[in-house]
Amino acid sequence: MQTLVTKRGQTVVPADIRKRHQIAEGDRLEWLDDGTVIRVVPLPGDPIQALRGSGKGEGLLDRLLEQRAADRERGS
Image 1: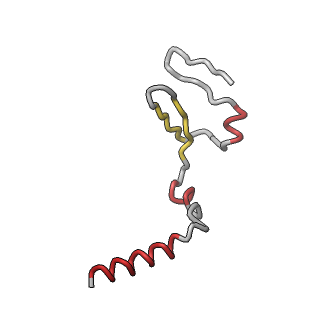
Image 2: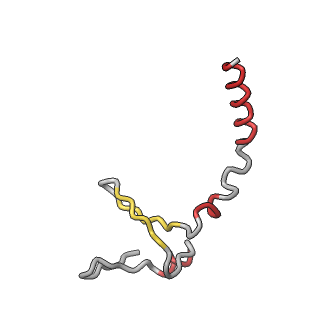
Image 3: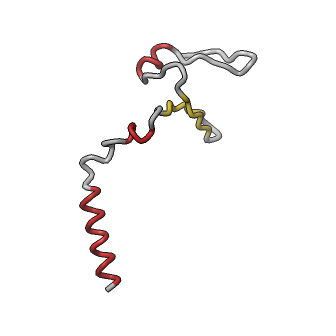
């Protein structure tokens, strides 16, 4: 897909992309430029809610408790 940039530096996010990524009026987009490629990433309205559950199944609590036990053993 291609879009044009206006004199004011504006462009349009194509409807298919807006629908697929649930981008609505007022949403924020992050522009990432690594010097070679420009990426546009939609930012969630509530970043905490967007991350909720993303670590599920990773055993993070078990790893935290193991690390704390190891720290206590080293400190004693």
